[in-house]
Length: 87
Image 1 (cartoon, rainbow, N blue to C red):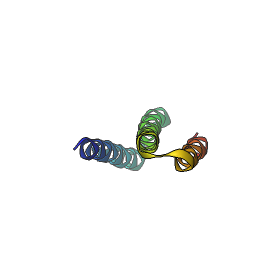
Image 2: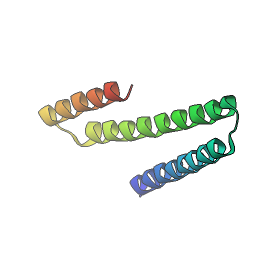
Image 3: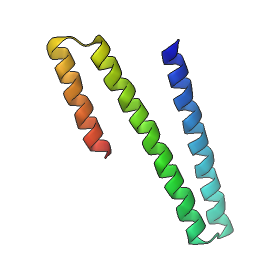
């Protein structure tokens, strides 16, 4: 049940980001000032970052809770690679 709640939370976050993207498109069409666009784009980037870190955190948690031995070590190494790729 907890996993379903986490997935739904991430989906809801992505829907908000999608709404922000449509808002930025509208702002571009309206010729809004670049400062307004940068503020919205920065907010989107931060929101995407939080989603990515939540996904990575959940992956790492699953690996630590369910992984054993070498499998666990490989999963942790993969999580570190993903983290570095994202940052």
